[in-house]
Length: 452
Image 1 (cartoon, rainbow, N blue to C red):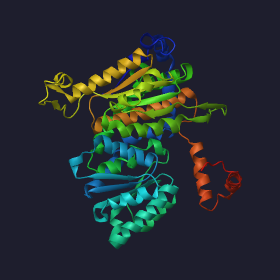
Image 2: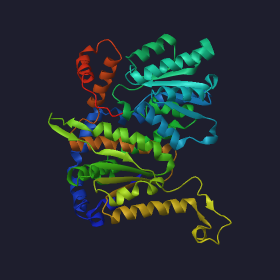
Image 3: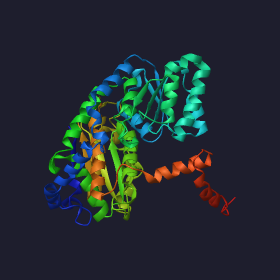
Image 4: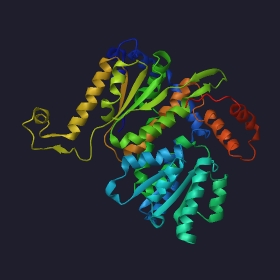
C-alpha cells in the first residue's frame, strides 16, 4: 500500500519560513470536500478520463490476449512525450534483463539516433507499436515512415504482421493508414490526454508484449483511484498536491526535485516530469487571468546524485521542495561479503547488505535536507511490481489533477506545446499552416548574433 510521509514538510521539522504548520492540514481536511466533489463531477461528465481507465477490464483483456500470441524478442515503440515516456517507465521498473524481451523506444528524430537504433534490431524479431493520440504527430509519423520502409525492405508483405497501432478510435491519418494496411488498432480514449495515457494501451500494450502482467497493473491502479476519492487525511494524492501548492505559492519553492531511491523508478521520474510540467505550467487560470503558474520539475537519482547535485540542494538556493520515492523491500538485498575486512573502509560493511547501505544513504539524505530547512516528503512503496506501479501511476495522475484544482487552472490542455507543433508544420510546408509563415519570416530576417 502506497503511503505519504510528510513529517519533513512540517514547520516543526524545517522551520516556519519553509514548512507548513500541522494546523493547515487539519483545516484542509475540513475544507477540501468540494475538491473531491469537483473531480468526481468531472469524472462523471467524462472530463477525467484517466480515472476510469483501470476499470475498463475489456480493453485490458484484449491487450493481454493480443500480446500472448506474439512472442517477439524486441518491442519497438514509435512515439513521443506520453506515448514514449510511459512505456519506457514501465519497462525500466518491471522489465528484467534475462526475460528474453527488449523494449526499444524511438522518441527522438535525431537521424543518427534513429539509424543507430535500427542497426541494433532484426526486423524478423521485432514488433513495432506506433503510438500517437492525434494520429498526425510530425515526429511519430516521420519515424513511422522510416521504420515502415526498413521493415518492408526486409520482410516484404510479411511486414504487416509486425505492426500494431495505438491511436484515437475515430480520427487521424494514423488510424486511416492502419485500416488501409489492416494493422491491429488499439484505442486511446478520446477523453484521455497523452500524458495521462500510460494505463491505456499506450502503456499496457508494450508492457504486455514484454510479458508483464497488465491485470495486476490495473488492480493497483484501481486501488489508488478509490483511495484518491477519500477524505483529505486518508487521501495521499490530495495531501501531496496540497503540499506542493502551498510550498510553491506561499514558500516560494519554484522547483520540485523528484528523488527516486530506486534505480527502477528513474525513468518514472521523467514520465512524472512531463505530467507535472505540462499539466501545471500555465499562463492563464480558468477565469482567463494571467497567472504564469508552474513548479519546475527536475530529477535526481538516489544514491547517484548524492555525489552530484546534493551539494547544491543542501547549500544552494532554498527554492526547491523534494519528493522522494522509497521502496521497503528489494528483490535481493545482496550481501556484502568480501576478503578485505582488514581495511577500515571495508570492515564496517562486512556482513551487511547493499539494501541496508542503500536505505542508510536515503535516510542520511533525508536528514541532511531537513537539517538544512529543505522541505521533503517521501512516497513509500512496499516493493516494485506490477501492482505497486499501477498504484503509483494512478496516485501521480490524481496528485496532478488535484494540484490543478488548487491552482484553478486547466491541467489537461497544453496550448504552449500546440503552438510549437503548428510552427513545425509551417516550417515543413504542411498545408493549412501558412498563417504562421509571417512570424517565421520575421524571425529569419533578424540579424544573427554569432561568434566564430
